[in-house]
Image (cartoon, rainbow, N blue to C red; front, side, top):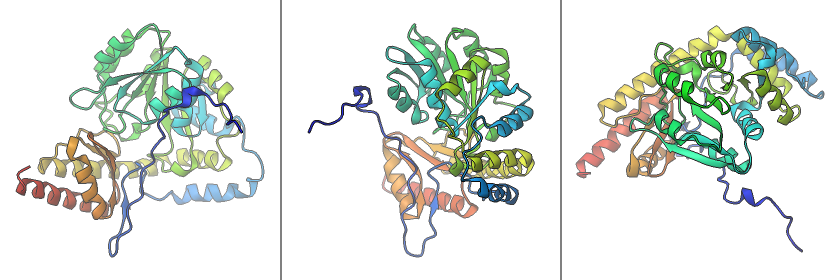
Length: 363
């Protein structure tokens, strides 16, 4: 029997690779540092909100997510019709690709960056316009601007960048956005916005208020610790958010996700206090790796990046032996999430032993 005919555009679409779990080893407590999860458990108040909503899970969720959108509108002082919610920022990213791009169109992004970018580009049949990061593992906005052509419909700027953790500052973003053609939508993907130094890294919402062609993506998965519930939001002009609602998956954001997100906003001070502890741990880990001579990139996220090139898989294997799952990109580097204090301390021990071993071997 002949096989069903499928879209040829999907041939060669890379599969998204989720962070791997640590290998279970005798007498070693494993830690997963491969998925940029928040290692803190949900706030009791958030758990209570979820439990209170459980008797309603036989009903469809609020299709318009009105309670959540109203809470976000109040939190960010924006009109409710400028907000679209979806299944995490990655779900919204796919909607943005769908409303802007198709065969013959270009989606432009820095690379290496978030793995979903080339995937959603191929899914909608568009052409990836990937621009290498600069020598400091940051977006090269000058090179990205030079790469814009008549086919470019969507530009993705991951700030801070995943997996390098680096971020571009206000001066560079000011110049870039002032020069981008106004008919090209620029998405500032700010999944890690809560972890940045606001004195150095701008708030994407400032640009949304200045430019009609800027959209901002945020998520509840990282700082707010709701990764399993899959809820994020986009703030953009009403023309963009209205189009996004046309392509959204009906009832995609569950009742539990909506109530948990609202409860998180109501107790945001407690959650952001946890974020500050993660930032302090990130800076301590980065300083320790720097003293070892491993030169981590300057991170503004909840993880660190080691650009070890050909040594990447060797270091990943050393981490695995110690019960630490990290995220290696063969031949490029490793992304390592900031985890529990014990996990962070073990990472530094592994790095010191691995670095010393290579020095002894004359490498």
